Image 1 (cartoon, each protein chain N blue to C red):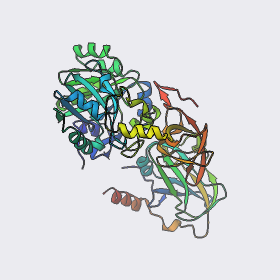
Image 2 (cartoon, rainbow over the protein chains, first blue to last red; image 1 turned 60 degrees about the vertical axis):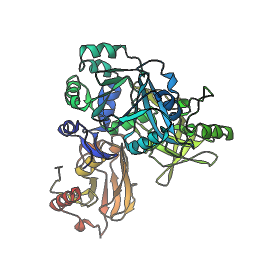
Image 3 (cartoon, helix red, strand yellow; image 1 turned 30 degrees about the vertical axis):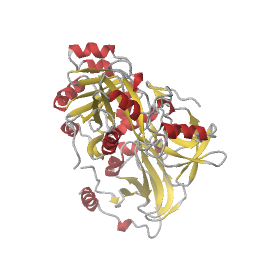
Image 4 (cartoon, rainbow over the protein chains, first blue to last red; image 1 turned 90 degrees about the vertical axis):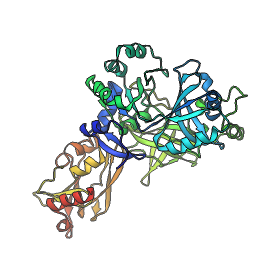
Length: 363
Length: 131
């Protein structure tokens, strides 16, 4: 038996199919992954993501530390409540993890990292912090719920107190409010509007029930994966890892090379990689033949050079198979993918595939 | 517990076989198998006329999350395939023993039918896999 979130009994009562995810018993779906996917695109779904890891970093050295630790620049967080997506790199420019960092005060930031990399991340962060006057504290006893979909914020309001409702109404994308140990952020991993809420575990069951009563449908990690893939959002461990640089993972936009005088871990390696010429990139594929693209299938370009699918699945919104693939930069508008000995034809597109319920990809 | 019709025969790899009135053998996957796979989005079937052997990989069912090979539980020549699955693979989820059938073979002399499990034996097999 794995670790259980505070919502475990709720999942059981809702007939969740529970699977092991990074040592946690988590819902894969509650009956139909496809229906849950569509519900998030069309209305509002909620995900228990309490297995993710929230870490508070406080103290006078916090800002300098995070500017050194993260490849994106937290000085972009000009006011309290702002959130930033960033990679944390090793000295070779490989991705230790991707994360969201929230500014909760001048000397108070919260980072949320992946469950599967918890131990590695905590050790890495502590090792790098030796010369900084900071305190690193994993948030114990918190639950995390993502409420996502076009109706998500409207339905979320029905499960909140009056004071919170006002805050949430005014939230701009990638902004958060922190009040009474509740962090409500207008962020997500689906390509839809919505919020992610970090709250004390002891309060999560009544909140979950209030969301249910407000018409928000529980959704599992299965739908979460197809939603994020359609939205062109990377999954750590699949689309990038310790040995791949963000420059070949579709994450160049998250690297803040400016200002030049900011040093961050991995910067030197990335500059050298740029100097030598980046030869690969992450693209979107849409399968034109029949079948389903899967992780690790071989991509074959017109000039016979090769790449690899990093995330492949079926897109419920497009009703076709789609994938993210790391390929030579020379790729044209079409390529083939080897599936069980056959070469299937794919269109090469810029990601994302879907935003706010609509197909948005371009060839 | 998922449904396991008594009149069918079963393989350990979760296919079922129905003996049709004309003696041909209809093949599908069990309700338990489709539950494990989740929502199906693509089915690859054998070709019409193809000669298939027992336990030969003759097709694939793919759900959103995974691909799973179909191992033919019986030997023979393929005389019918369920063309409806191309547009509606979800039929396998909805009616695995009826409209979600996969293909039919004209059995060869040694079709392997007598080696398959009864409904009771298959039920026991599922329970042993679950534990």
